Image 1 (cartoon, helix red, strand yellow):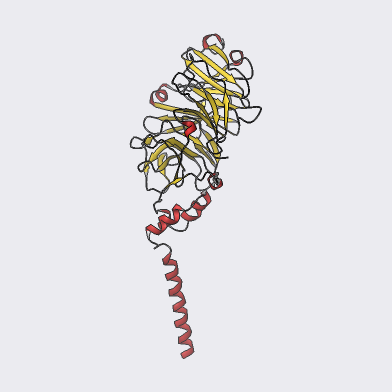
Image 2 (image 1 turned 180 degrees about the vertical axis):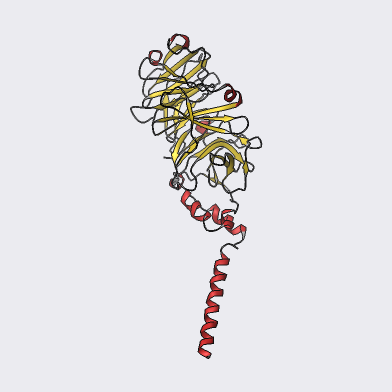
Length: 381
């Protein structure tokens, strides 16, 4: 009888220990959870951390401002960084979508304008004087620089793009100056001596699809060696920068409805698996993701990005696959910051709301969110 009682007491003690053990993890202090979260790096780290229990997922993110680890930035390769200059310090800040902000002094970019970002490289313009049109490639992580010929001083090219790594032989740089029905296109390859500049009059290009005006709204993008441009009404122009631009120019008749056009304040275009995707930001906060149908005459809605994420900025936008498809996919990361410029905002296509990693924040509007108009996404390679 005594042995049976001892065995019963032992079983009760084991049960109490298990119950106490299970109760320990959800009851960790918020300060400790925030400290642990601040040390996470990858999407997989955050995913595993968040599925432990509800209290862990709800813990705030302790975001720090750290010096950029220029000698070893391999752990930052997984995600693009939102790059923006601080007017107060003159330093460049690199905002990670999931955790900390990193800063770096880049004297090579002092008084320069970043035109475009791709594959870890920046296309930059500027000189000692405002009228100078010095153009060059710059890699802020390796400090490599590749000079291009100056643009003519009497030009005003505003939208730029390049097709790939500037160190490759196939790299092409395109600059566009647009005024209603007129457009000038500047094309060059690294190593060439002069820009090739060509004027295009839309009214004389396509008799089957006349275009009275075309106002480019975002940087052009390259798809299969062709250059695509999106205008404010939703139309798309495409040309071959390797050939006669005017003779190769075509238009896609994908104009948006008047109701849609009247509500739009910003638009972007990206390439995903060889397919065009247009993103339109409404004044009411709604974001529309569209792609051309088979006829290339209409836009159709994209309601789910699958395992992909879109990164948007005025200086370059692109699509990437997520490493943890069930946690961070179907999002659009924007050049917007929350909590006194500490955290990057994203738009969830499923909830159609703005959120922020590590914060209990959800909104249908972006009016109280700081927008970083002169920032660019860049990814260390």
